[in-house]
Length: 139
Image 1 (cartoon, rainbow, N blue to C red):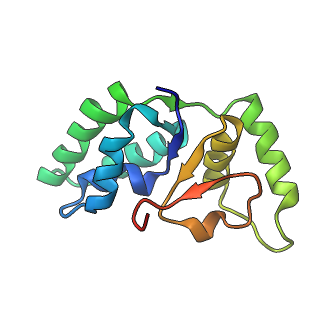
Image 2 (image 1 turned 120 degrees about the horizontal axis):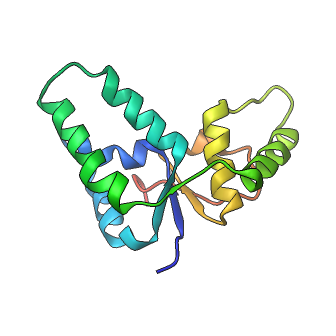
């Protein structure tokens, strides 16, 4: 299948929660062959893991990263095409509105690859043009 969705950190980390959102889990299963994530998301997941104290939860998150994320989900880079999209998006944002740098990189990777950005934080990305957004917690 062709890639369709770029998953943000809050979507990709949902399966590791004590009580994960069933809609998100269903969408992950339904669209598994169509999902990718950004290298920045892997960074956010990895740094979150490193900051966790040794525990059953840390082992669960580590197992999820090593058996699901890294081997089965394409991890897309921030490359020249994404950098060009990023610059265009930065110029188009309303005065006084600045998206956090990593989030804007993730959005630019979605745009550069023609993917729908799946995030729970729709409001964080609402000022970006040309990027389709979905929130699997509500759709």
